[in-house]
Every structure is written in structure tokens, then in C-alpha cells.
Length: 311
View 1 (cartoon, rainbow, N blue to C red):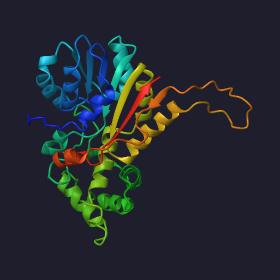
View 2 (view 1 turned 60 degrees about the vertical axis):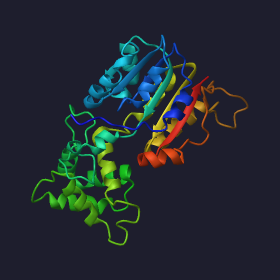
View 3 (view 1 turned 180 degrees about the vertical axis):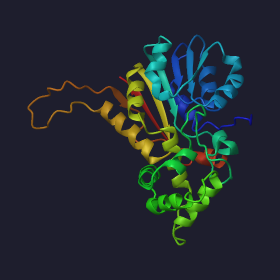
């Protein structure tokens, strides 16, 4: 297995944001390469870290990397969107802190056999959890032109979604689209030459859209954020790192709803809904990576960190 390398994004900002208590209970929703988890665990004495990931490669690599902290860490192979179910299974009611880094790991992108990258030719896959059935191959070769248009437009915010979808369907009439290279060639040729490289690699948006569809990245995210906030102790902190506007919009909206007092009609003389503010928003504007980090890790460029504290 290729080495699972992943530079943790905004590591110092996340650790400061969590305000870790040595005896606290913390959850790293996306274990990945274990960088964030290691820093959290190193600050615990009698506390406990629950580290979740649906990628078995990540779990295998992190279990070795975090071996020195094994008494403080419980690793769970699952999707963080099952957050409340996971805690219930561990007989944990409330936690002191939660970290959710929603990005794809460098290992997944760089490992050719995983089929995430439009730079390297590889079998179409893009599954974070390789035990699931749905892969990029299924999406690209089985979805209708309307279904492809919808996901490429919605998840990739791609202006030429319809043309890309039509060309995918036309291509597969003669043979299956089996590799990232084949897909990248179709996408590139579907975009008018004068706009093709205007915003970087022309394949970025379509590949993002298909990856989101394969892994259900936005599905139930709002419900998961709700479960996380509800699982925090009073004074507990939550850090969420997003990498594209669709994720960030969902996180921002859920935090706004928890931050809002009273949702009654303004014409009423007094509140009848009884809703009370449940969180403090510690980052009115999302935190972004500094120049030094960007110089060492270009993949932090799109990252946005939002931090809240439970009242």
C-alpha cells in the first residue's frame, strides 16, 4: 500500500480553536492521514479521541502512525454522517470537541489506483469507501444525459454541463469510459477553446461533481452538522474545514440557524416559538490558510475554517 501522506490543513488554527482539555472527549470526523488526530491525542492525558474514517487505507495507516497514543484513541470505520449512531454505539452522550476536515486527502488524490485525479490516467473509481458499489465508472457509464447534466451543473457549478454530459453519452455509445484520462479528454473537448483554461484545469469542476456524487459528500451533511452541534457539551468547540462553496454554504447555514434567537413572525408582539441561541460563532468570517502554509501546501488554498462554541 502506498504511504498515506496527508498534510493537515490549518493544524495550529484547529488545535487553538478546539481549546483541548486533557481529560476531554474529542471526535475527529475525518481521520485521513492522522495529522489532526495525532495533535489532539498528544494533548490528552485521561481524555479520549474518537477518530472516524470510511477509508480503510486511512485507518490502516493511521493506526500505525498513532500507535503511541492507542490507549487514548478509538478508531471507527464508518461515515461521519452516522455521527450520533457512532457515539451511541460507544455509549457517549456529549463530547468536548469535534473536528471535521471535509477535504479529500492527498493520498486519495495522488494514489493513481483510486482514480480521483484528472492529471493521471487511472481506472475511474473515486470511492472513499471502496467497499461501496457506486463508483465513478457507474456514474459516468450508467447515468442518463439529464442525470449527468444535473450533477455536473449542481455539484461542479459547470457552465457547460449539458455539453459535457451529451459528449459523455455519445462517447459511451461505442465503448465504456474506463479511465480518468478518457473522461478528462471528453470534458476538455466539450468546453470552447477560448474558455477552456480560463479558470485553471477545465476538468476540475466535472471531476469534483462526480466525486461528490459517488461519495454522497453533500447528502445528509446538514443533518450531520446538526447531530454534531447537539452532541457538544456546554463550552464545547467544533471546527469544520470546507473546500468548496457548496459544503461551506451548508455549514454556514446550519451554524446560522443554531446562532439565531427567535424565529417568530416579526409582527408578533412577543416570542411564542421559544427558540434560544445555542452557539457562539467564534469566526464571523471563515479562517483561511496563511502565506507560509500555502507555500508548503497548495491544497490549502480553497480551505475555509469555521469554529463555534456551544452555549
